[in-house]
Image (cartoon, rainbow, N blue to C red):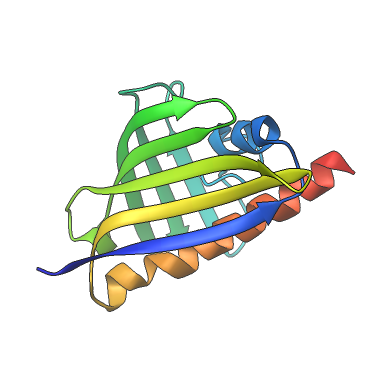
Length: 147
């Protein structure tokens, strides 16, 4: 199976520490682990605490289907990096890697996200839309937090 990577960047109007804190907090809107509960979507995130070798499971229920995402944190450094494995239906059960880095830039933070080792097919490449949505939600949430 041929594999590919997704590479995205997004400028966020907050410090790297603030962006990192929202990113790893499942209780904060805008982070990838946030669990909204509304009429269109429900989700649940399970991890006792974000730490290296800590496991996570994130289940999104949308359109009458459950989308399960799980993995293990491999690197966490406040204000600098979050790295974890990522397994979901789109990766066909294969372990892929997600690396998010946070760099100070222009009074805010440049977030660089690399999702590597995903299948080079429609489902695998579809992960890009999800990560773009998450980066947009992160920018919106952090902007509201810093106003």
